[in-house]
Image (tube, rainbow over all chains, first blue to last red; front, top):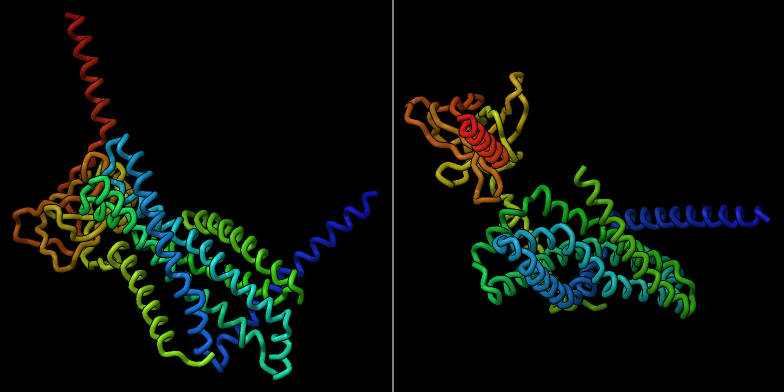
Length: 259
Length: 157
């Protein structure tokens, strides 16, 4: 009676370890072709356009909205203590440390990560990846690596833009709508944020998140089952796994940073 | 995909905007522009530093001239604070360093008041005159104690 349950556990564990090993091999393959000629800059630029420029509108709009909400919530709470002057610090620190990198990563996962996975998975399904192999073109080099690298390059920039637009949204609500002094808002914001603690942490987070999202999206797409259900499973799996990984690693990085 | 000049241009604009946002965050907001080691390292010892922390600003008449580099405990169990100041600063040896609070609940910083001597402080030297942080708890404690004593004395009378 017990033996099958234990065997199932063993099988699942082996599957998990095998999965992790395949992800590591896949990553090292991407790394190898990324530093090797040809660099395929043309494809990289196109991917930056697809995942970066086309995500720009949603990221900037979301940033401004989040900043505006932070401004409103922060103002309502801070006026109770007569500390509305530190609204800039509240908006700035929450955006730079947490909301900027995390929300940008989640938005980009939904906007660009899912598209990446679906595109690669449908190439697998329609035999285009096999076609590349037949022409002795490495599909990882030609299709996967530009997408993963573009993600690594694009996410930190989108995160920075999200944060700047968030400052702007907070400014609109705090200063223009609620009547705080603009100089107080900006100086409280600029004085509370330190490069070493806050901006560097924000950058490290967005680079790590970019690596996670890029790896998960391309891996899921590349190893999708060659059916239409496989394409949809790869897309859904990417969004779920990447979002959870981003939130989990956010906690880990924050905890390690304060050590 | 064939080359498209418009697409390249838009990607270039995107990269510029991203780098601009990163630079704004690092330099303007993150305060990276102030070059960390200013060169003139001066020591000041205090009995009580309150909430003073490393990288707290050092100011003369409210103008930032450096930051707190290190805080240690010296053999006499006093707080030994190393200040990293702008090397072009001409600070007389009889200057005073005092720990102040910006605003009522603000962060603590060190205010320097230049003295009148002609001799200037050199790197590694110590500021002799210091003024410790005012601790509100201690002030209230003193006040309550004094008030209590007064009451007792009055009762004795």
